[in-house]
Length: 164
Image (tube, rainbow, N blue to C red; front, side, top):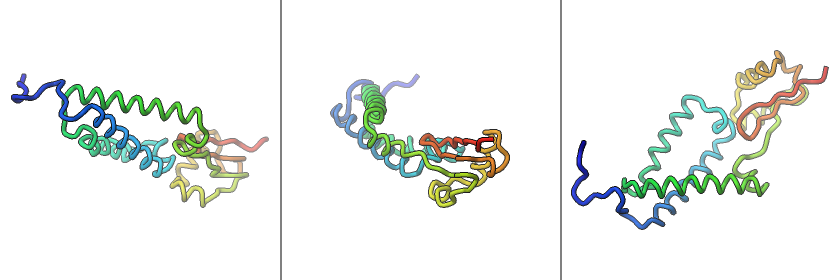
C-alpha cells in the first residue's frame, strides 16, 4: 500500500466545491448537445466504435471536471452533480415537450407503404442493412409488406406491417 504524498488529503478540496459543480454542469451540457447532434442512431444503437468513443469522451472530459483534484470529496461532488443533472433533465423532458424534442428528438418515418424515404435514411445515417435487419426482426421479408417503419427517439426502428 502506498502512502499519499505529503500534504495530500482524501477530503481537502483543491478548488471551491461550487467550481466542481459548475464544471460538471458545463461538461454535462456540452456532452448532451454534442451527442444529441450525432443523431438518434448513435445514441440508441451502440456499435463497438460508439462504445469506444463514449469511453474516450469520458476520459477526455475528466480533467475538465475535476481540475486535477483527485480527492474523494471532489469525486462525490462531481458524481452527485451529474446524477442530479441527469435527474433534472429527465424530469424536464417529462414536463416539457420543447425540452423533450431538444433532448430526445422526434420519431421519423423511414418507410411508408413499402417505399423507403431515402432522404430521411441519409440524414439519420441509417443504412439499408440496418433497415432490413429491423424488418426481419419484425418478421417481414420485404419492403412491400411494410406499412410504416419509424426511427424512434431511442434509436430503435419500429415496423408496422401492412394489414392483411
